Image (cartoon, rainbow, N blue to C red; front, side):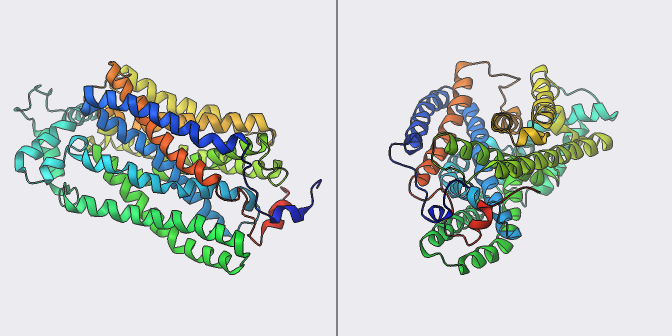
Length: 451
């Protein structure tokens, strides 16, 4: 090693004249421009704006939650190799504070987003009918695809086939949970409390260890990670049910929470790779992060990409094979127009097949340019996946945005939420060491070599 290891036990701060010291200003500017675009979209099409905000919120939420998972799994396994890259994930995990602020508009716009809201909020049969109509057309098409159609949709909210009534009955049974009132809000508060607690101690105890060099804090973080992982898994799953899956109130999938987790996990490794490589390029870190670390990060990113594909395909295959109408409506909604069929196909091709071959090779994982390209590619496709999750439920959207207001909402909300989140994260990076120099396993990480 060309540098003495004693140097690495001192805080590795971002110099004031380094480009990374000012990255937060760039993202703050991005948020400001995005805010103007989002405001234009909200004024001209408030309905579309609600879905655009939810899409952008999901993108940011999975960034923070994926980073929390990254750190939890390092503490659970007592990993030594990752000490020098773990702090980057801790910064992204700390950004969960911004997610708390960004969820507020979702709570305000919930009556617009969720078709079951009126039904559960005390509007009786009219609300159930409204929610049933929201997904009824696609549900009936699913019946037709399965060979059980009773007839075409009459095109009127006042005329309902037996299939409409069937789906209304399903929804009625869910209204005890899909409560458009206090219960929905209480659950949101619980999720946020769990996530804020995780984000707070993940960075807080780690930076405290930088100052104190107290080895007992490593034990404490491992202990908290054990039960924190259970809280993390439960809160992420139910938040996904509440905020995303219930957009289609007649649909359900027990694998949906796992799909959210898998997407966030892939994203977390990609973000750590991109950020730390930029640190090295701008001289923030030196040999503390080396090819061996990137090799392992690449392997984990590749592994969780395959896991994401396995989960996504398994969910699709089981639903396709059973051909149960209340399950197939999710995929019919994303296949019945040319534009959404294109988006669905692009996820298979560009989020799995292309990056699978791009980062599978050992040589690519150990090559700076190839791994960087694979990580950047996956981050981009993650945003496409979030769009795929949410935007088919915007009533005016049959594919790509058709109006300037719709385009402004989509782009503006994404720029605003991601800009605000990254501004918070990048500011935190300027306040603490970018390497966990107090961790007793630091030497093991500095000397790490792949077998």
